[in-house]
Length: 139
Image 1 (spheres, rainbow, N blue to C red):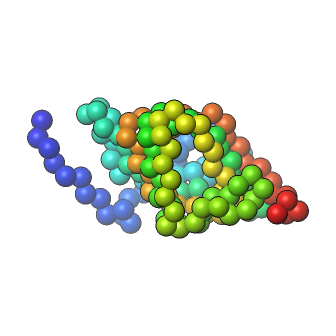
Image 2 (image 1 turned 60 degrees about the vertical axis):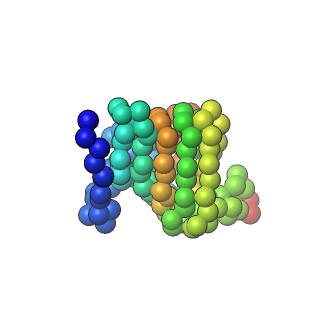
């Protein structure tokens, strides 16, 4: 096997609905709210996946998901950010997170959020996904 570099001009890459890869459980009222740009998928060669993830919550709602890391997951926030369970911002552009293999974790977003994500093997196993209304009195 010849080793070659992979190069993408990401601004020219289409956003792929996450539901096309992970199923209809990620749809909200029949519409996608998570989109991906798959930069590389080296799993068949013993590697992992690199992607840009984009979360677009509907107005007045937030995306809440729980997952288990099937391999080490590196996340670098590019735009937007994540919140705690009460709606307080806790992760911002420039923040980095590592979810080691086997770690249950969650993500909550009420604004459009874009992150660069690297899985060292298989992507996360999503255990819960929902879109819920934001209670503006919770903060």
